[in-house]
Image 1 (cartoon, one colour):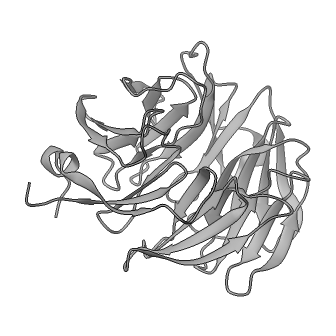
Image 2 (tube, rainbow, N blue to C red; image 1 turned 60 degrees about the horizontal axis):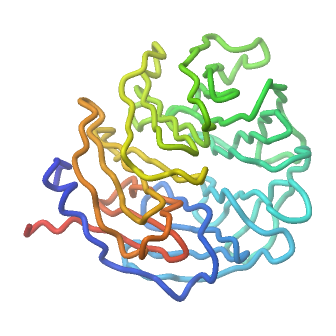
Length: 315
């Protein structure tokens, strides 16, 4: 089944999980094979969901350090995540036996960006201490350090050879992983959005587009090769400075975003037109996390509750 405007408009909540969390879910991530979803929450819980059976499998807790920005590594039973209590250390956790495999200390302020390489054990972190650090899961020592002028967001491209850093909500620098210490090989200067900061930066699965999410009413799409602005997506409600997630569909044909009133907005990446507004069951609560499963035609959205969406093909 291919995605089309009609299919996107037909998405409905298939499962709503109301009893897993007592506070808002702050990040979600799908495993590479699409079979598992993991979430982290302000209530210090980590919930593992089975996407094939559509049910929660297990709940773990990180009571001492809190948990945010959770990401699967290449092994489906290990994750990395950031802390929102005690310190700003990144933690590497085995889900199998709920034990820490390694700690990655170094950041001195809150980590606001975390990206796992799609091809190996390296990952990137960006912090309000105005640094981006490059790490390897096999070593607690930082492999590379970049000092910046402002708040960073960072992400690997789908081939894992290049990473992009968004700096000060006004420019993107592209680095070659093999020679990043020589500086960026290209810099794109973008129009600065007044009154809002960039909160995330994502490559499309084909590596051709970069999606920039802000904590305001604007989402930007740029060409990953030229830095040219392609689309500006607006109309989703975000007037409270929230970190609302936007995501690509796996075929990069659509961009989806939550909003502060519990509605999901869907735009076409080619013409910028809004394709659909989907009513969620999040009861007018902000949709903080929203991701498309990389392998199956399901969506996950979350506020305090987790929702799984499927297309209603009969419509």
